[in-house]
Image (cartoon, rainbow, N blue to C red; front, side, top):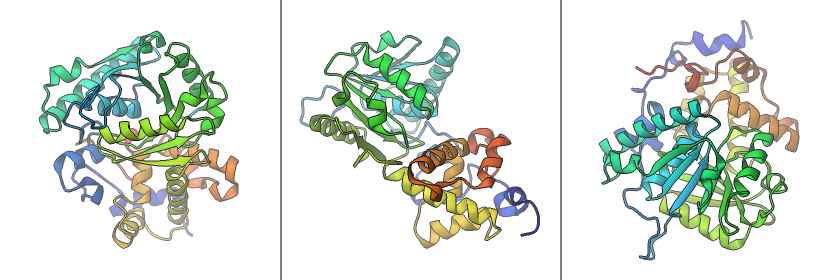
Length: 343
């Protein structure tokens, strides 16, 4: 093919710009809140409108107190979902600056949920149910803690071990990893039977799926509890055993990598590759737009992990490596396979 493959990303008019006014997908469910959650506001969107924490009505409920380690986009979305479900949430960040940023993120997202009618509670009431901290000791008393730090084995092992040390023996500990082995992470824990994978999807408020990933030692009762928590969040749980990439990442990355190879080879433009899957196979979002939403760096990291575990079929294309090296990470950086605008 003539020319530099990376230039395909910006040369073709239909791949040049993707903004909040782009065509809706099936995932948006035709409503303004979902469209904004997917394209403009990853923390707005849908949520559970009733309080369910500590429920005695027989309906699914979440723990009264939930901890989240990491207040970035994923962690903030997880915290948002549990607050709307009625839990009190504490988010632990690495330092005060990060904690302040996370707090602003929660305040804005919860306010938007109130404005969109996702809850009958006031913004002040919701904001009062979530707080930030910089010490894992703040997690003491939580019935569930979800680790949501970057996809790095060392970071996750450290965060999980420190959290476990302050939790009660019957508390549940979960990881939001999308590719790292649950058993590998559990090996560093004193109570692996109380450990499970809860793989949320970005953006959390709009996504309807959570993978419940079971390790070798995970208690059956904890799996049942996890299913109930996900139901209380208004989402659907799928249970998978610990294996490389679980179900969603393994399939999603395989499709995404092949789409990137097709773009690299000049088979079609990014917009046309996505349209083929959206219109031909009824995928709500095409694989290249999905990669932009997930983050090219995140997808590259998962692909490298799967390559180590499953072989060269998951080798990342050179175009993906080049874009990440150039800082083009998708929506969060303003450019990936599409250009993104906040306006």
